Image (cartoon, rainbow, N blue to C red; front, side, top):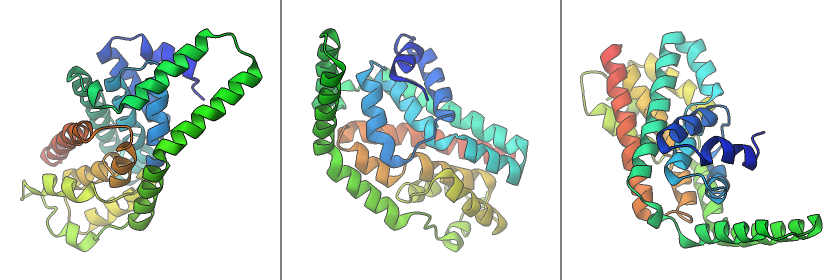
Length: 265
């Protein structure tokens, strides 16, 4: 496990672009589900990781993980797996970099930074281990009281639509000939929800029905990286302007990846 102190050393003191690269690589080996978005986001902000670097991690962790890589390698070969990993890391690195450069910290809910300030004050005090436990419990209660409704709604939406993909409908327009199939697949993928292990069999089924590889992988990336449950959960810590920017930047990167795959294959 990577401790907060180790994470701070790895990411907190680095220049932004190098931090984006390291956060994306760290995300590859630490996959998480959508319901982990808030605690991960709070944890990174709390230890001083820049906003853009935090987003690089949040993008890379679900989209480019060892499960997706192994399954893609086994089903489609090393070239496809390598291009997917490279393009996924590219999206995570540059999306986080762009978000960081835009200076969108004002669109993070103020109470998130208040937690960071309060925790910083606590660290300067000399308190016993028992007092630290008590303060930790109080902090957890405060955070849970603020976000539990959004987490429950997000999990409920995810449970309701998990793995649901209208394969015949999707395959009917996912051919190479229609350029608009890539952006349309991304738009359709966002409201759906699945993890990498759950979506890859669907990817295989769509390809068997004649869908093009780039369009299908763009759909896969949007389902994993831009899921509706994650957006609902993040709404408690991010203002709508930042969520829309996040979706726009990542969605653009995913579409470029889809077009690239369709051009190569």
